[in-house]
Image (tube, rainbow, N blue to C red; front, side):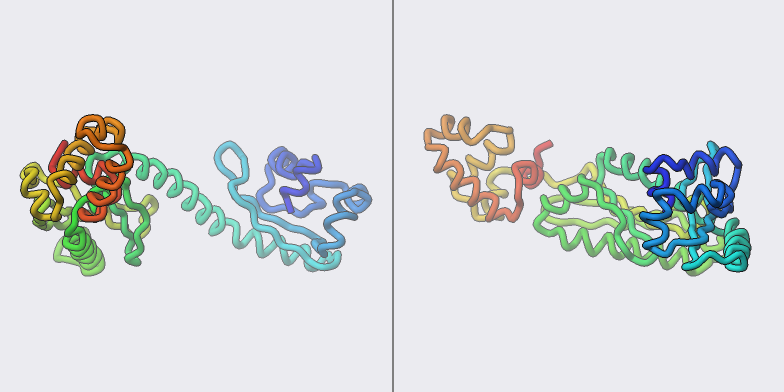
Length: 290
């Protein structure tokens, strides 16, 4: 195809752009006899039966092709060539519109994903087919830090489902648009507000849901004794957990408590196992540390 020609310096892309062609046959770019004598014709075109090639290119404003659609026939045929060109010319407007939509949404989604990942709250993006398209790192940290994460998950699903329902069922005077829905959920670790709102894709595509899960300002701060009682931590394990929260290394914890690094590692393993989390950041979240 086009990449092979370009790699061998036949310049399909440049020639097409120079001639301003959107639908073209290979003979619009190359003199027929010279093309049939070429290396690419002998080594690639003939063995793969890619004869009488016609193509349509969807270009951007600078004239570069974002995508191309190729038809080939297994023998040289003027009739087939005319038919291929007619089909491609008919398909070209729809093909260009589709490619433009994909390119614009890819850029749009890339910028949104970066934005979501910088927010100080958890974000989950769900499409209208109920498929999760993106989850922010903060959401992962929040869920991993709460032993009752299933309550948060269930709440997010309810909010997302409600938004999808409002999008599909028009309301009087609103033509199916909605401003979103919110729900509060409480766990022993904190109080949360889950808010789901529709997010329109460019070009009038179906909405996708934006589900945001921030902790509110009244999140419960669990003191040391409550933390030990809830998870069954021994006095030594509680000391290790508190040291992890303030950022001490295993070596520093050992020096502080007068125990070996090996013993510290064993206590850390027990703390993580009992609390059901996987990192010191999650332990800090459990304890309410900021």
